[in-house]
Amino acid sequence: MSAVYINSAACISAQDTLNEIFFRNLKPENSVQVLKAIEPVYKEFIPPAMIRRMSKTVKMSSVASQYALKEAGIENPDAIITGTGMGCSQDSEKFLKNVLDNHEEFLTPTYFIQSTHNTVAGQIALALQCHAYNFTYVNTSSSLEFSFLDGKLQINDGEAENVLVGSTDEQTERVMELYKLNKTIKKEENFPVDFLNSKTEGVIWGEGASFFVLGKDKTESSYAQLTDIQITNKLDLEETQQFIEDFLAKNNLTNKDIDAVILGFSGDVKSDVYYKNAMGLFEHSALLYYKHLSGEFNTASGFSTFMACHILKNQEIPEVMMINDLKKEEIKNILLYNHLGGNDHSLVLLEKA
Image 1: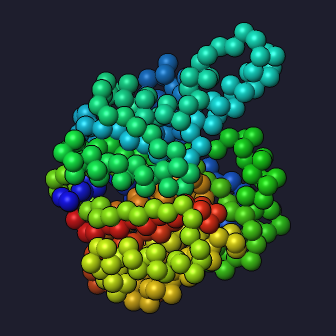
Image 2 (image 1 turned 90 degrees about the vertical axis):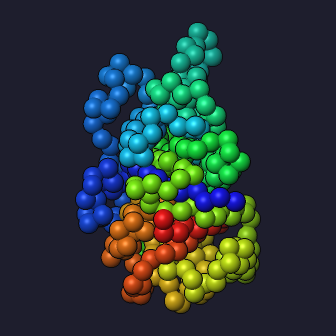
């Protein structure tokens, strides 16, 4: 298989990640139930008449994708692939409320049309007038990883040279209420959260959009090589280390070859045990975490991929992400491990471009 490069990376998150100097201004959060994204001034990027009809996730994705394409110097990609866990939740809620308020009669189709998960990829394609391959993956916490896998295959099979790959998820009032009721979100009495040594269930919920341009050729702006991806829906705790070792062996690597590991510690005592188990493999690696910066959500791994790209390019690790104090002279290989609530485990291997 030929090499596939990440030639640009853009992210809208709970951090000011559109700002060029965001790397030095990362602010952790451990005392709120819901972490909202820092949004740009949308009218600078999207015509005002269109903004009114767009949900938050479509707006975030439109801007992040514009940033990614501009950085890569691509006007029209050969494919647009997005991943999302919850899709356009805001418009889904509006449509369902409409159904109830109007007693299932005289419904306008707008909210229904815009509530589908593939709205994001469709709106980006409409704005670009791009008629190429357009696909959306809805695989809970591995949605972005499936999108990366598809993008990589498109390039390796000669179907595309440059692929826009993104992930996006938004919050809605009603869903957040339900998440609080079913204990997905942490109770207020359990704050502040110790992400690495939590004794309580639940997470701080976030949102955001991350977009990347994958290319078959390395460019001056390349961040990393997307070496490999592995996904499994279910994993027993005692299988964690074997799952990782098999993945590394497949890529002719051992745990000593991994310079940094980014783990998805969310502060949920039940599911973080997988990460603690994985840590035992990497005594010689820098151990990092990130959900105290982004919050937990279906496509939170987009934020960790974005951070990994900058770590590889800058050859620098932000102090706020470090679990241990091990520092490598050169950061060549980064392994990302993520899951959501103990399901949909994914490994992504990135290499310095």
